[in-house]
Image 1: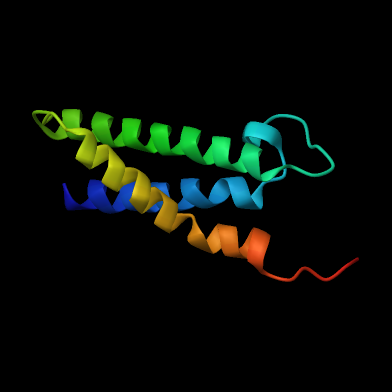
Image 2: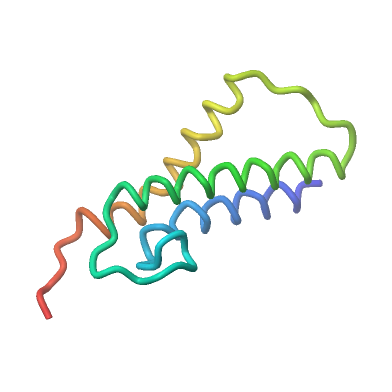
Length: 99
């Protein structure tokens, strides 16, 4: 059970940073000249929902799934946003040298 929790955290960390390291729309679509922040935010929310869904699947496979209130999902989204911080810094706050 402990390994599945660590695996879910690792998947969440990677998924939270994917929108900032990929230039493709929704990670598989066309590659625009400049992907806007709003596309990255939409991708971040979709990946957060997929990660929460993976967590629900893992929980139901381990044993009985416990009902969660809105507080759980608010904390999960905040944790996902915290995981996304390195990618956000790399994409938006780091100074990129002109090519």
